[in-house]
Image: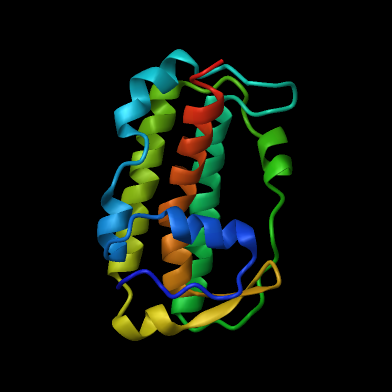
Length: 167
């Protein structure tokens, strides 16, 4: 399944779809966004570039949390469940999680969650990608959710490269 046409989604979803690799969805999900920068990320894992900003470890945890939430949404919509889904507050999630992360375990967990996401999307029949539902008061298709998942870590990697590695 190719990247969906851009439509009038909120900017925070459009940017993730835009930054996702311009490949088939499963190929885009198979790319490991953090792999080439993993060693440098480990060096700065507990660094925050400003007060009240997340550390690299917190960003990785956030990417894992978002992937879980978005995968759940994709599952519900792919099964044609039309129940509107509530949003979630990322800062609340960050405040209510362990603060002393083991970087290596986080990277393994991200890889495991990503593999589970790939298995999930592989399980959908072609029709399922056209289904949509409401989450956070926004209508999203299963295909759009897939590319949001694929692009979200790339967005955060770009932030890490720009604001954390050059302090």
